[in-house]
Length: 359
Image (cartoon, rainbow, N blue to C red; front, side):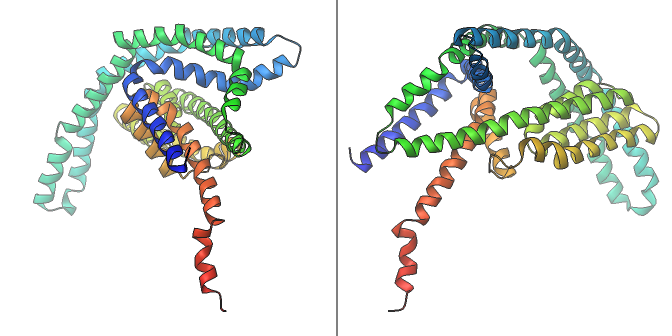
C-alpha cells in the first residue's frame, strides 16, 4: 500500500470509530466504565499474579472488591445525596429570595453613591427572576438525575454489565495486548510500541493522580463545610471535589454555590467568612500540594485544552464523552509531540537553514 492508501485507511477507521461512538453513545457508558476499571486495576492484578495466583482468580478477586466497594458507597452515600439534592432543589427559590433581599439592602446602603438611573437598572437585574429560574432548573435537573427512571436503568446496567466487562478484560488483558502487538506492521512496530508506552505512562499517572486529588478535595470540602454547619455542605463539598477534574471550574462552581447558600442561611458574617476560607484553603492545597505531588505535569496538556476536551466530549457524547476526553487528550498530546519531533528532523524543517548557509 502507498502512503496515501495508508492515510486514507487510517482516516476511514477514525471516522468509523467516531460515528460508532456517536450512534452508540447511550449504551457505551457501562462498557467504558468497565474498560477504565480494568485499566486502573491491571497493575494490581499483575502484582497478585506474581504471588502465584491464577490470573482469573486475581481478576475475580478485584472485580468482587470493586463491586462491594461500589455497593457500600451506594448504600451509604447515595441516599444522603439524593435527599440533599432534592431538598436543595426545593429550597432554591427561598435562597434566591433571601439573596435578592440582601442585595436590595446593600443597594440602599450605596444609594447615595449612585444616580437614580443606575439604581433602577441594578434593581431590574437583581430583582429579575432569570437567576432564580436558572437555579430552580438546575436543581430540578439534579433531582431528576438521582430520582429519574432513566438513571435507575443506567445504574442497573452499570452494576450488571460493568463488572462482567471488567472481569473479562482483567483476565485477558495481557492476551489482548499481545494480540494487538501482533497486528502491528513489523517496520513500525517498535515506534508504535514506544508511543503506546508513553501514552500509558502519561495517562495512568494523570488519571490515578487526578482521582486521588478529587477524592481528597471532595473529602476536605465536605467535612469542613459540614462542620461549619452549612446547609447541604456535604453534597456541595463532595460535588466540588468530583468536578475538580475540570481545572478551576470545580472550585469556582463550588465557591459560588457554597457562598450563595451561606449568605442566604447565616445572618452574620463569621460563618460566611469561614466558608470562603474553606474554598481558599482547598484551592491552596490543590495548587501547591495535591496536584503537584500526585499529578504533576504528566499529561503535558494546557488546562485550557483539557477544559475544551471535557466540554467537547460532554457535548458530543454525554458522560461517556467526558470519560473519554482525557484519554483522547493524552493520545493527541503524545502523538503531537512525536510528530513535531519527527518534523524537526525532516528536510522540510531543515531546508530553510541549509538554504541560508553561506557558500
